[in-house]
Image 1 (cartoon, rainbow, N blue to C red):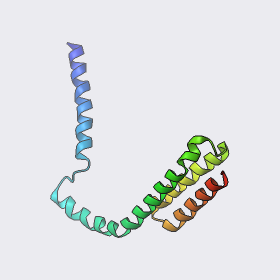
Image 2 (tube, rainbow, N blue to C red):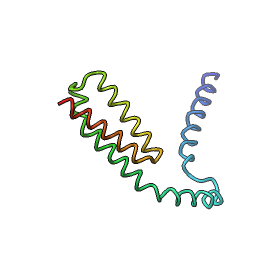
Image 3 (cartoon, helix red, strand yellow):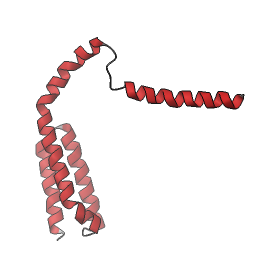
Amino acid sequence: MLRRVVIGASLMFLLAGAAYAQEEGAPATAGAQDEAAPPAAAGEEGEGEGDACSQALAATEESIRDKLESGTLSEADTEKVNELLDQADAQCTEGDMDSATKTLDEVKTMATKAK
């Protein structure tokens, strides 16, 4: 009997977490939609720049992936490239396209020196 109670309680907690995760993205009330609409509209202005930054980051990662996987770069250079890619990603997230572009250019320079 105790086993059934424990299994039932465990299933309840497991399913309750999944149900919570599904409801997280949906607004709770109609009033929440009205409040959420203006910030979304304001975020759309910078969204194009963020997409361009993300695309530039993805293109750079794609272009140097072979060098990272083949071991052409030294371990220290590989570590530095990964740090710079993380830094560029953070700059893209913050919306600083100029700094992210400079960081990605530095990554490309390091990758071309390894040839």
